[in-house]
Length: 487
DNA sequence: TCTGGGGTCCTAGGACCC
DNA sequence: TCTGGGGTCCTAGGACCC
Ligand SMILES: [Mg+2]
Image 1: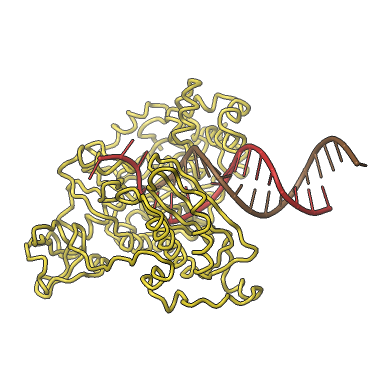
Image 2 (image 1 turned 90 degrees about the vertical axis):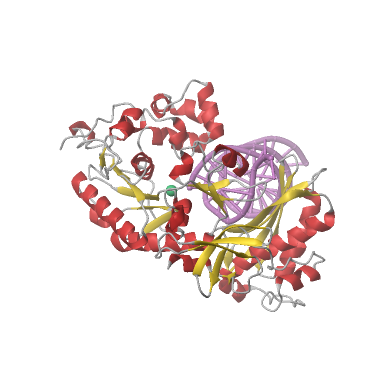
């Protein structure tokens, strides 16, 4: 088997060498004989971890369900003054837009972009479809985000590289057929190298790193590409002249740990050497649930802060209930106008699902976390979670509350806790809203204002649809379930 | 109109127990 | 009575992931 290119070539060469239409990207060939018996390879039996990462996922879902957007720059994220980019289509990335960039900056760099709010319910539905396809083909899946997951297929145990490649192509095609979306796939002897490989395969590609060639592939890459190296670790390494993973691998464990701490240092030293025996396993229960919000303008009075604390506690509590858990620890998080963040937490003797108790604790905690100036963000985090059912066997009965979460509306809760009433969902049309019309069908709001609303009527299956401008108060125009756009 | 929201894991100090 | 070491839990802060 001939390598399309050697792993020792510079990275830019890797990128350029791949034809635009290629779906195969062979990074290196069979392992050299002296690499076969590396100790972490199960006595020489190849271990194949596969990483699937959907391409520009949020933006791609928008382009899929709103066909007019295909081929156009799309930004998904916070649309308010303080929003950031959560997803950008490749067309938008060409303008230098990146995830986590302030939306205001992204708009400046890419004025032609269509800017849309997140539709998490749609992304979640598509994500479930993607990874149930993967689960069918590959077995247990460790999902690490809505759009990416690891798997270690039993059928690839001890397989040669050609079999892995065949498997990868099959999986990618299946995902495309059932979801209409492209995902890039990487495979290698461990999670780190598989994830690096999927990154090299992007967009819409496949990349397999031969067993024993991990270090060669990693060496020229910047340290930032390693899982666990963020801005701080990157800066610390740069200060001592370490820019690439190869340079990191050349340091002693002692040097790395003294720079990055004991745990991270040992882990990163091993990863830099291509040593990665972390297992692939389905994720269990979440260890915490939280809700936080950043205000359009900083809050300046205690009453608004208290209202927000109640609202965030109720929000987190709702998810606590849907996951059938109870919480022992409440943490309140407060970010001031100067962006410094303070948190206060309290752990009770027993776990609870009682929202009144949770709100009381949160309200007690927040007062000691307030900054001198305005409040930018309020968050409430519930942790120390146990199964609510299991808990009820041992706990004294939940104390009587005047309103239970099942009988009270959020507005009633807000009133009980002296919070401002939650604004009615009756709000003007906004770009990105899903709508339906008896004559024109399902659509989405492109723009609104001056008593007019511009709607694009289309879903995934309609192809690019017509745009119509209606009066904002048109009784025929009503809100619709975003999931309908998947039809 | 600088800097979202939902998570995981680590560190370090003090309390407390043995 | 004094000193000390180890383990665990709690709290606050922070790095990092997408
Ligand atoms: Mg992705």
